[in-house]
Image 1 (cartoon, rainbow, N blue to C red):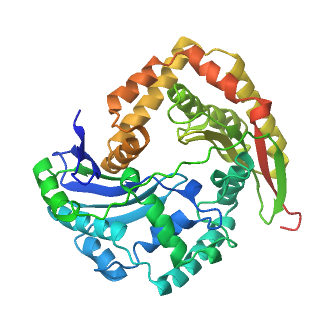
Image 2 (cartoon, rainbow, N blue to C red):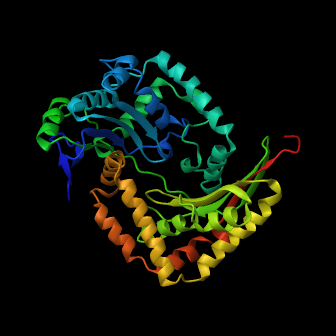
Image 3 (cartoon, rainbow, N blue to C red):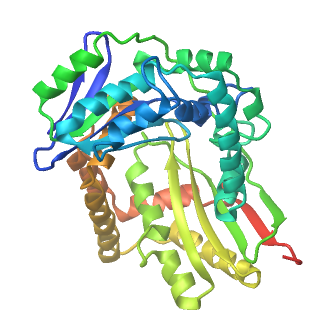
Length: 412
């Protein structure tokens, strides 16, 4: 395996892949903290900190942070999910020291200026409005709340208009000290950099880091009861999302369920739902399925937008497709095609070194090791039609299917 784990004397783990065929390097800090870890009185905290780390350190102001990478044609970015915060950069391999320097600086030495906290709250409030104004975005937030009621997995990653004003610098520092720890931080790097070069810069910028220790436990969601919710919005289309709880990422059925969701409504135009609803009847422009696994749970869903007059027809057709996949074992030839399609898509996705870099960091945090691409493909190849039918039967039940519906207002 070309990937390896390097542990520095101070305990910081590095996920490393040497890729001599490229002229670039992609690297970043992957932190095992996300929306589900936010303090009870500070929803949106992990995302807020992701914004603020770019707003100044003990050595740099915002302009210098961005300019240091972008002035040599590089790119620096960040994002927050329910369980992870990622701060990363891509640039020409000859400038890799810049990325290691500035990323380490912003992750470990940000100062969180008061005036930037005030300003960035307004920016995120605008971001919240942007998502709530888009029904195809807002419905996913409401769906999370439906599936994970009274739990942080059901709260928007951005937080809410009520929670953001409660965040202050004292809470930010307390949160950072609790979660930005040795156990929860990994540096991941992939590209044209030798291990000798990597260790040169790691020893310069990382060996004396003030690493804190700690690994606060995560609260597992309670059981839930499927329910349906409907609201009216000012839009021309109806939007609907149905789905429920799913298996976690470590479950033995993870490959089978991933394959099932991809077959039903993945990105390919020949997905089951796209062919039988859009192509056959023209009832919807967009219909798709998704599976979001977490460390201890997951969720699955099917989303579609359409004329309100077609909503019931689509819902019934989707329910029929789910029932058939739950009861009928797929023929070996068709199943082989489904299997090969997912493997082919994964092969294309794995060509992207950014994906590989981010993936290595997450694997090290979630599994304590790096999982080779070949090993994951072997797991998919071991799935059989009975496994496929079985995960559908266990998930696509009335008890595990809730529905969020947005109907257009009559005067819209």
